[in-house]
Image (cartoon, rainbow, N blue to C red; front, side, top):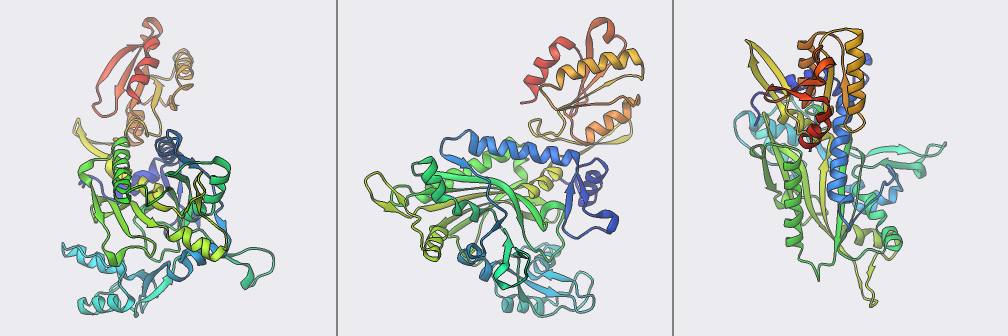
Length: 461
């Protein structure tokens, strides 16, 4: 756990420095809804692109698609989401605020220094725990009896309202992958095992206040389904393989491994489609919480969609034999990952009696790779500095500043996690060299302008 980072510090820095803003703030905002600012958007895109490169573009056995957010409602009926995609809700009897019963119980035990997992318990079982412990709402009021609350966002298509036009925004991106299983086979002719993946939006009607972008109504997922023949491939070995690849990715993006742990779901808390699920959890100040998940979905989805649609979804081998593939599913929450990274990268140290805050992002994913500024406001110096800047920005995303206050410029770049700050001074006009400052060590060194591209190339990978 990063003891220097608190939720208050992270949310304040995120808004102040343009990572994340409360959505619709001028109208009072909206619970569990956020907008990503300029630096948050860059950070998210860097993560998404690295994920795509790692798990799809660099592999011959995984294919990328981009499926629709709105699917035929029969998809959600067949997948079990209409009937089973529900959380248990309680309501404050006084102010009528709704809360997830499992979250209230887990928070109650967490404050006592204990841990409890109640995923999968019935409303009656949760009611008994609430009653035994006399758990109240966050505002100290009595709670209603727990009841189920479906998380799918319902909407309508067409110009005439009615039951026939009812559909849903996708609550997960997996179903779009299953819907295109046959299309990918027919167009790409892959051999088992193979995967289909995508990165995109999903929507869940959350009833509990989230922790920043960790739990939101609208969020980004990165996910793929890896299809295999259970008669030819051992699912346990495949599960462990992708588990290792997920851990490798957490290392690649610079997460402190001491803050991570794998936790296997108990039988009662597994989703209706899963035979085995493990979460890679991150330790926040409020405890370990799920960051990513890995599930063995068997043939649940393809079997149900084949049955409900009446379409043959078998994989056909060259000898004419058929199999309905099983699936291993690695899921990466992108919006959630941004919160994890902000907490993990947050640093404070003391410099000349003052606290310096900086974000120690891995250089591969830092929103801005370098910042360049003239030491003072001067037309000749600024013109020269801009020439140097333009020569570098062709290869790396950089930022040019000329406020003239070197201290404030360093402070801003530290807080947005820029690895290198480059200062052009009057000597630069003569010796064709600049001063480059390291974000983490604050060490400064003089380097020739002609050597800057090679320096950045060597240090930003």
